[in-house]
Structure formats: structure tokens, C-alpha cells
Length: 80
Image (cartoon, rainbow, N blue to C red; front, side):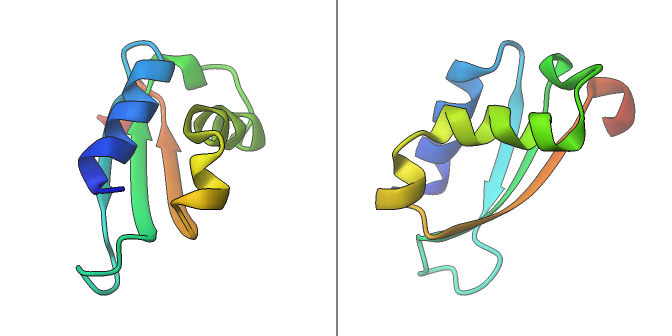
């Protein structure tokens, strides 16, 4: 699974989300990602709930294709 596929899963599941995905360690390590997601869906949600929304979007990929994610979630206002 590559960075674009991870971003696509998140953006399809969360309305108006923008996901930026990188491999922060070794560029050839496609199982560790840094994920920054900006979405209005996070407004009024706790940090735990925001992260759960992203985890839900990734579903079974978190146990099969992705070993770890460094996750940052922001509302559009926080991202400005």
C-alpha cells in the first residue's frame, strides 16, 4: 500500500478531508506512515474520537498493510 492509497481511503471516508501521507523513516518502508488529516468532521470531537475516525477509515489495512501511523488531526480552522 502506498501513500496515495492511504490518503485516498481517508479522503473517501471523511467528507471534505485532506490527507497528507509521508513515509517519515525510510522512504522504502511502506508500512510506517506519518498522516496529517484536515477535516471539518473533527470539529467538536475529542482527539481520541478524531483519531478513531481515521482508524475506522483505514479499517483492516491497519492490521494487514500498515504497521504504524504517526497521526495528526486538525480542523480546517486549526490548520490555518
